Image (cartoon, rainbow, N blue to C red; front, top):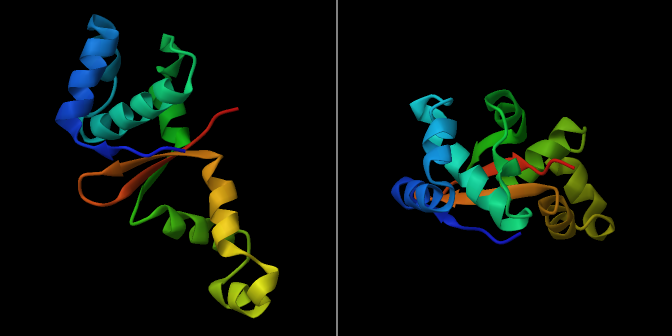
Length: 128
């Protein structure tokens, strides 16, 4: 997936130009603290979507898709592995039998990512 560097003002401007008054009505459903991450999701989703307003998910759906802010996508992927019982020690012992970079690349097909101006990444599940 292509990544963007998120600046809230730029995303807000893009959303207003793209969706007009519908944007203001939509974003008002979210608390101020979530709005930048929502705008990042909408931008990424509309880029990969079919161009309609189906990217406007409900606040509850957004919260289930939003996987949080991470220092890197690799850090997120490592936590997914650990949650599945595969620790860094196990990965190290597997050596060439497990390609961590390939795993991260494959996993990136299941998530949208938006890089923030702080150098972190927001991760969102791709809904199928």
